[in-house]
Amino acid sequence: LIEAGIHVLVEKPITTTVAEARRLIEAARRRGVVLQIGHEERFNPGFRAERDALAEPRFIEAHRLAPFRFRSMDIGLVQDLMIHDLDLILSVVRSPVVGVQAAGVNVISPGREDICNARITFQSGCVANVTASRVSVSTMRKVRFFCRDAYLSLDLDGRKAIIYKKSPALAMDQLKMRDVEFTPGMDLAGLDFFKYLTVREIPVDDGDALDAEVRGFVAACRGERPCEVPGEDGLAALEAAEEVVRALRTHARTYFPAEFAPEARA
Image 1 (cartoon, rainbow, N blue to C red):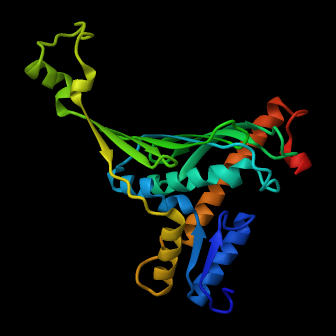
Image 2: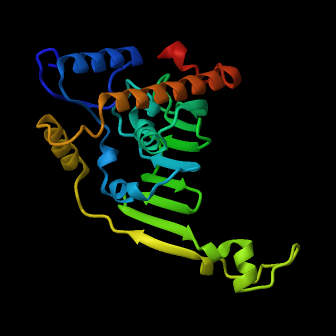
Image 3: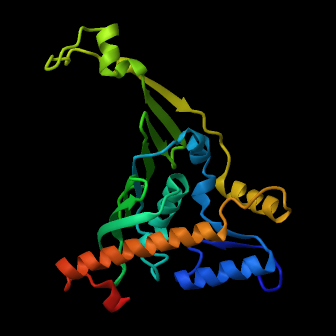
């Protein structure tokens, strides 16, 4: 389709391998067509409502849990579910990944991880702790962003976004001037912490993520606005996913070689 000059919206992950993704991106660039990747969560109303409030995150925590659906058994959990959060995190941090640690187990899928936890360190100093499971008894899709002066909580399923900010009066020098005569070693347990916070729920509309994704793609094809999730972003998410799987396999090969060796049975 790309070689025929046709714009393409590709479901995530962009391709099976990083090398394939690079070839696809180069083909789209050469032919001058839009290559958009279907990372639908980028169009989630909750994320879009909160996106502008994010600034230089220092720590990110993501949980994506779901019951087993008996589909996508040809790929592991990381490329099936976790990659959604990897893409969201990369779109916010915008800094190279410099370290990945991961651990996981296969419960149902032969040779494929069904549960995984990854700790990703970025060059900026930000750290992301990402947990995903496709064998849980309930569904959860939550991401928390901890910034220098704010904490943002996003419920992607419940479409709820809340931002907590500290008051300037929370600084010790301000406490000394405003509320108490602070001295080193003094017991401040009697102060009301919540008095120094501002809590605001960010309005989230009822828009449909899939509809917004398709409308964005059509607009990009018409040249009305840039592609929101270009092939390069899909490549970055796939590279991060591969790093997580590589770290997971290294951990499994070291500690549980007989129980979980995905590279041997994939």
